[in-house]
Length: 282
Image 1 (cartoon, one colour):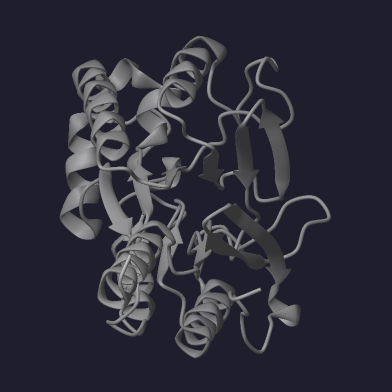
Image 2 (spheres, one colour):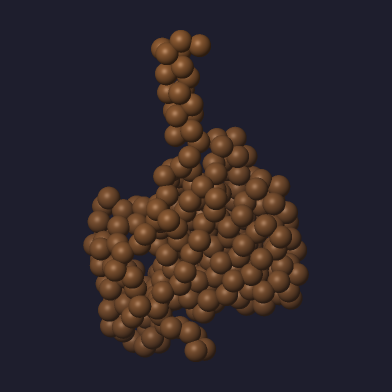
């Protein structure tokens, strides 16, 4: 092999390696800002303070994107709560994508076509897909899955759409497929009994089987107002505490997730312990 041929071979190998290796990045997950919860809908001064702080922190830390996993407000359709959420969210640097997720306090415990239409008018689609580098994010309206009886056709449509998006993500060679929704699929065990804070077992099992079929490894939620981490085989269920009012002995905070070729590592930070910077190159 002459020198020119050898050099070309090296360049091809380097180019191929570069196309395979992804650039590490991080994103921020916020959950349950839930404007109005602290004061039982009499006001939202504490939610304003917390949410302004985390949006300013995101502008300082510079994540690839921010995802808010539901319960943007406490009272579905409340004009003042919605306006305050939107006012503060608009302060996020436009270079940082913001992905809203519908929660049960946004579309109702038993959503209807009307409640979902009201949500989409204010916040955008209730289920959609986005991509950053080698990560495909699939956003679901989990209230439809938790209680589909108010809008069975929309529930069925979302499930058909989900399978199609999973097929597309796998076909596009996504390294990481992450499903974001408000309700946790489970808190401690994939076979745990039904309760307010998880998805009912029948629909849970069907969706988890679909996720395993398409190689999903990360499920990211809120709703619990506390942190919970659990696994089902290769599936990791990440439930994140609130930006807004916590329950039990939890504290308000946010999750930072670092995405590398080999996987996603993440940590929940209380609001008083946020890092000065996020190191993604390690």
